[in-house]
Image (tube, rainbow, N blue to C red; front, side, top):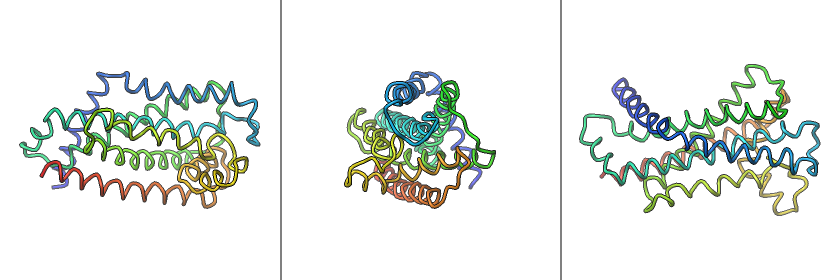
Length: 253
C-alpha cells in the first residue's frame, strides 16, 4: 500500500514539475521580487538602518528567503485551482491511484521550486556580500527550518486552491504572507518599533524563524528561537493540513 502511494505521488510530482519547467516565468517571477527587495534594502535603505551589525546583507538574508517562499507558494494555489477547474482531478479519481497523491504532487513541486529560488537568492546574496560562518550541521538546520516553513505555507495555499472561485482568489492568499516579514525582525530590530507594533512583531512566527536562521548563519547560540520557530511551523502545518484535507474531501465527495 505504501509503495503504491509513493509511486503515485512520484508520478504526480513528475507531472507537476514538467508544468513548471514549461513555464519558467513562475520561478523567475518569484525570484526577482525577493532579489529586488534584497538589493533595495542593501543599497538604498541599508545606510540609514541601524541594525547593530557590520554586514547588513547577513542581517537581511533570512527575511528575504522567507519572502521568496511566501511569494512562491501562490503558484501552488493557482496551479491547483486550474487543475480543479479543468476537470483533470475527476479523471485522476477515475483511475486506480491514491487520491492523496494528487495533492502531494503539487506540494512537493512547491518544495522543489522554492528550493531553487532560495538557492538562487543565496547566490545573489554571496555576490553582494553575504557571508556565513555556519558549518554543515548549521546549514542542514537552516535547510530543515526552511523546508518545514515551505511545507506549512504550501498546505495553507492548498486551501484557497481548492475553495477559491477565481484564479486571483487562489493566488492572492499569499500576499499578506509576503508582507508579514516587514513587521518582524527581518529588516530592523524590533526594539526600534513603537510599543503595540513591537509586541506584535516579537510574538509572530516570522520573527522567531528569522532570528533562528540568522543565529545559525552566524554560528551563534540559537536559544529558544529554534524551538519557537519549529513550534510555529509545525502548528501551522498540522492545522493547514487538516483543513486542506477536509476541503479536498468535500470537493471530491
